[in-house]
Image (tube, rainbow, N blue to C red):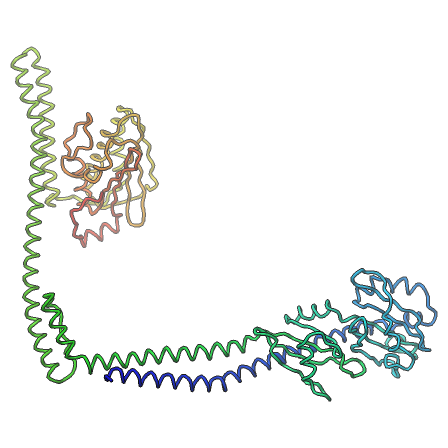
Length: 609
């Protein structure tokens, strides 16, 4: 048997033996403790239920205490006047008192008056026949030697267990001689038991002691002691524990068996705790056993195998950044250390070659990008200059052919020349702004004044074209740190671009607001002649949004973007998906702008489309 198998067998046998011993001890000690706690809880609930039954008897006796020592009752037993009956002995009176029957016994032991009510129907009912032997002359219920004496308890009748109370009839405050007996009775039926159960939030049941109907009651009666039956606690089912107690009648004889059902939560908790403990022990034992096996395998059994396998993997995959294990202080660890030094040298050489290749590739990429931008710029610039030059040549030709229209030709030549001059100036401006060589004359600028000025200059052009324009200035005190002339030029370029490329009929809107530390200017058109797929190129030099009739140099938005970024701001364009779009300009407010001026950030030349 291999060493690894022997180790596994020893750990397994030890773990199983330890688990069996702990399971045995825990069930003998811990579960018995939980069972005792459960039994104590059941006995407390049983005591509460007995106390509640006694309280119900006491309440009946207390109610009787308001009637027996009363002058009107004293007089009624003597003369049986009907006024007392009419005023005090209606069916509703007994129902309100929760008394099923009343008996007025005269001094000679005869029933002077009796009243019984059925709570279910709310009408008068006959007295229980087997009540009469218990109220015969000389019986316990009529045996009162003192004015304040009282007999109260349970009386077992054929109609069911009954709570009964008896007191002597006297004058007010127990004065005068005893003149008969007054008896109150209340059936201890299911409604009373259920009311007590609801008050205690327990499950109760009552059965006659002599003839119980349930098997569990019969077993409990057999378990009671003969002289003084002690409470019995026994399992009722898998989920509940029952407690049984004897209720005695007024003669001291066992009358009823009271059962209280209590959920076996404590016992189940004990079983769950023991089961969890055993499972945790097994899991922990398995984890510890596996850990021991893994540690032995790692540090004792497989060091040479790991070294060979690691070198084979490095040689196969040529992954020289990997290292072999150097743990220990023997020859194998020294060999591993020497191999790692060799691998580190190879890895460093490879990394240097990779870095050089990456730098070279990056430089080549940048050169290609610069060359592509230069080629694209000259291509677009050549196209932009070719058109006006062609117009100049055409007009010169026509001027020679038709000298009579020389004035018209000169006017066109002058307009084309102005267009070329504007194009050249825009090209130089773009170059200066891109190189950040243009000097700004910055100061505190009231931004709403600049926006109002641009609107005042451009609105006539929009009106002449037939565009509807709306303005909304939610911020009137925004102050930025900027070159007012250059900022006005940028906003004018954007405003003019929107006017030129908005076909009529359409609507434009200009909004000025602030958010956090930024001033936000939005120029919106609901029908802008810009294709959504071309929106990302709108700030590129010589970009043409469409092939419409609008004539521009193609550099106005490029200039606007360079000016705004030179002020540490941002400009973006977004289409709305319905043929229109919005230009959004964001500028730092005064305090933040000053902070940026003191510590200028490094701007990256990326179009925020």
